[in-house]
Length: 248
Ligand code: DER
Image 1 (cartoon, rainbow, N blue to C red):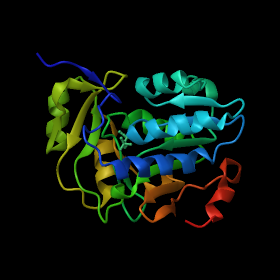
Image 2 (cartoon, protein in one colour):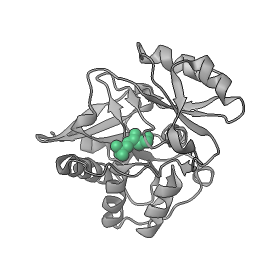
Image 3 (spheres, rainbow, N blue to C red):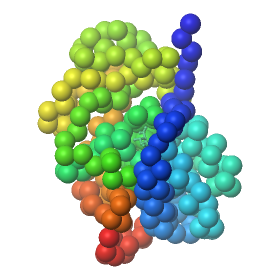
Image 4 (tube, rainbow, N blue to C red):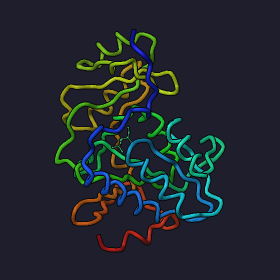
């Protein structure tokens, strides 16, 4: 019998390259430096965010209130002493920070390898400023499948057929909100067109294509240091915008 696995609880790769781990840590530390006392902070999900949480906790900031995108992140943040509140209680967030699976040169992202992309997109949208943290291997010349999906359970076979070239993840992966996690494996083409098609398909709760308009800053850590790429969403000075002018 297939077991159910909640989003955000995907185990890290067994033998992740130590260089990639160090790069994720470097990107996470750079982003943690953007935070200030009393900020309302959105926390993403995944192995890069797992590096971010201790980096935030170590800053010892006063009055930080966080909204988490998964139960996994919520538990890990609380264990480090960070205050986690329901998103609706916090109103507009000052900043949200999250990882990504792929970043293209235009600033489009694919997210949702861990299945938390619906909540992650809501939290990114709720923030004045959305910062993406990645190891350099996430930067790609062109997005490639799969594109993660969250689907309504009702009529899911019809939804999969309407999307085409999509299938449910094994082990009945589901989101904390009861959605079924699937992936689209067909060609991507222009991301905006695919994003619109997926959004318009009945039964699709969310998809993992994030447009550049949602992204303020991408922090890519590589062997040569930190590269900062601007997205199309404004980067708020109060959320550490001054840090953008520093060289990579
Ligand atoms: O699942 C997700 O959306 C994650 O944020 C993903 O995009 C990045 O995961 P990683 O930090 O484990 O590589």
